[in-house]
Image (cartoon, rainbow, N blue to C red):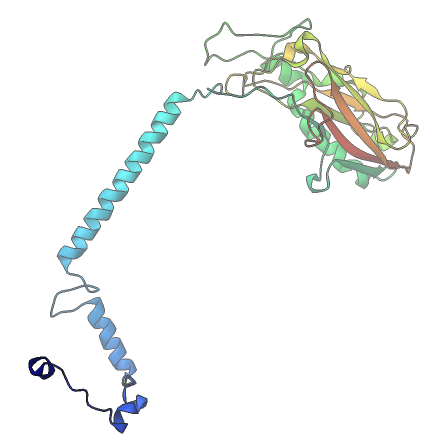
Length: 312
């Protein structure tokens, strides 16, 4: 027992001075002058004694530079190799894989203010109110000028699909003519104002392009226009040029790389007897086999809606 007691350390009682916690607080570092700070910065950037730049020797910086150079070269090579494999496996003319072909959407012209939707409102006697619509139609119809179509495309007859599957994948496909003069009162050739100055406006509707799509399953898709909600009397007669169908000879579409001069067929719609000073909610629809025009989630699938208000 005496041996064990000798090994014990006797604890001394705390002095009053040890309980003063201010004593144990770290002492504040003396403030350095601006000149001292600048000297420290210079030493950090280049230490002449140790020959170090920013705390590292030349050998250390060389190893770091070598490592990151090798890393980024490897990453760039891996990315380039992946892109090469991807581009090699993808055909620029047709998608390698695709889901079922969706029915086409529909769009209209003129639309001069996309932010506010397809709204057409003007006074027939006020040129400044409708001039923008006439200019938009004229710009859209320029590629359909008869002379342009005669130079670029071929004259097609009949109402059957114009398939060109026997050509090589990369071969350019021929496109059928669609001439501006076929749009009659809405061609802008006889009436440069497209009927707007007379209160008889024209619009153009077309189907969106879908690669390889054959609309109507052998029967032409037709277009109808009417009042979406409200009284139907205010719209009056509706005229279509050159007719209310999309001829099958313009399909299928082979893509912009092969169908270089392809001109989407148009249907011009004219409203010659619209009731003045009445806002009409008009809807034009595609109708045919395989067409969807009543989708609750996509308002441009198979139909297009717009407001029409004509003033005197």
